[in-house]
Length: 288
Length: 276
Image (cartoon, rainbow over the protein chains, first blue to last red):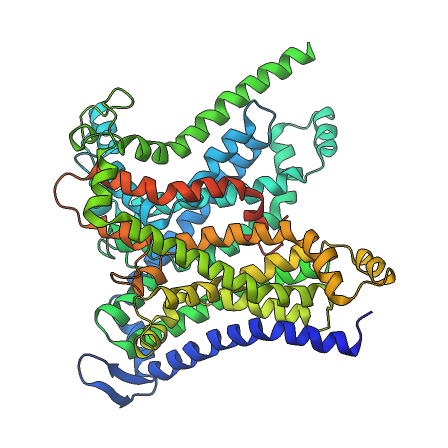
């Protein structure tokens, strides 16, 4: 039984974490909001006064805004489709009886533990280099002209790299979900002569729906803010400048803090829209 | 009859799964192999798989030219420090939420999760400015604090889900036997909580090790960890595939090994207990 005393002790125990996170959230957020209403150029005159919603209007009306939105959507959408579809197939495969299942699992999960700068650079140089890359060798082997991946097919390349990084995450979560599926139900359906596709649509997919939703939501939040993969490959060139990268360039490269902060506020709003859905699911689970 | 079919199916599964597994793992394998080649062999056409003269010279060169050990040490300090600090702050909080839950516990947990959703780029300049003003730019201490804060919600969540699995009856039994609160925590709860804490430490160490937004933007030379060290290879001069591979292998090897131990915790930690 929680007494009055233990309640206050509990509050005291939570205090450091709560206070720190509150500060971590409120201080920078307030500053971003503050800057977003100012013309603030640290290297060219500093604080040039209040400008109202000017930065917000200029951020969305700049010629690089819509391409950045498009790039962001393509990367997030492309990676989600690839990782979820392949993740389901892979999870179903890994759930089958086989020899050396543990080792295969390790092989499949490994890319998730590779730091983003390493995976981006390894792909960029050792695979996608138009002269010495392994893919160029492969193309030449089949008599095709090698592709300059990161300039000619920049978007495809980035999506490939990021999908490789996130496929393990999707697979692992979907595999965990599949393993909780009642195998008797599947066997019964098999006995009744239900074909594979029907069993998949009526039993496996509904069972996975919650896990799929979670994968989509969590990945979306992380994918909206991918940075290192673009930083070390294209540097935002060739149509791969995402919203995150655009804001980074505004803030740190061209030091237009007001404009970048307005962009930051948009990014925060966007992430929160996704977060609300995720929190609902997590919150429901907490009650159970 | 039925059994032969099963065996055949099992063989088929095995072959298919291994093929897919090796394909996914191949970029890592290729990096490791290339790290043992000379630069000329690394770009040989057709590519060499195993039939080359294995050499360790790239590892020596990487260490000598760029003092790899210093970056490694920075990574260890930053990832380790932020994880330990985070756990010290999170254990009491998760403990209180799991064992003395109130009406607001759920709201607090969800609110903590929401701070994790804050896009880093949205607060990049404020943090950058604060770092300059406080003299924290390019210091390990500054990064320890930032990485601790971005991972704190995950640490609290993971610990909370582990602590909640500790049955409350055991506490009551200990209390009946006359254990004081201190004894209760020290002898009853701590041993039961250690596996959960260890898993939490492991996963968060990995997350902090691989973090590549703040580490790239808030370090220059002194405090740069391996993420930033590898990024310095993005503008190469001359032949460098083998050296890039050696540097990459050294940067990911410790985490790959730790990662294999943390597969299960990964699901729990990154889905905030929504999938177990």
